[in-house]
Length: 288
Image (cartoon, rainbow, N blue to C red; front, side, top):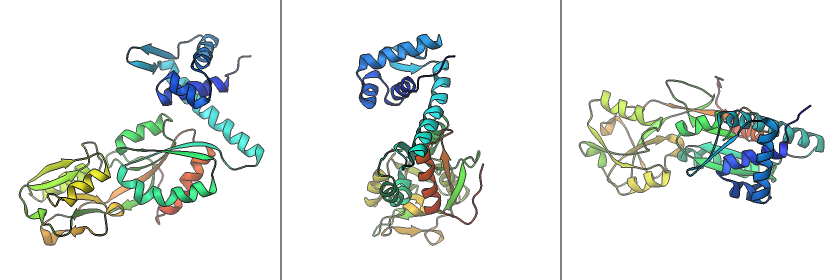
């Protein structure tokens, strides 16, 4: 009877996550040649090619993609079983994803509590647009994610509804300009269509004066006093002006924040998810 070698599977996952054999070898504490030999042996045992090597780098074959999905679940179950038998706290790593404007508001208060409770768990954070992170959760590349729901295709577990606010720096009146100058996250941001639609329905002309993929970039643009923005209430700096009908701006719809877990989420990932649920608790939680 043939069995899958979990150590080789771990090496394969390390190659996928790090993008190459050298970085993967450093992660697993082996030499590059040893990792290469184990992957070659795994391919030989299975009778299939798992990786494609080209000048552009390394990528998974279709079979490799399927095996990695299984491998992540197997290793997660193995880790959970070992932790249960040892009677200890979770170990390993948890990969977290969320938009940049959620990190300080939602994750910073939780990460200190989680690190104190589970000091042997390594946390890595990816800040990116929700539409980019969501498929990575499905593929098992991200373990836990807090994302803005796609209103056209709501998925994940609804955790919180957030108000979108019009904001400007104190001491400036950029909302008086026409067209209205905006600082926004890039195209693909799930709040951006709501912002544009609200302005269009109100018959207001507007233009994008600044685009930034980071919260810091948006803040810098607003502090110049040249434009306004719309952010979730949780991410609104307390010293910025809140704008609304008195300034001639239309109301904005709420956005929905959802929790996503990878198919083979480890016990550490699930415990972090529990902490996030508690921190962002809302009266009604729906599952989709």
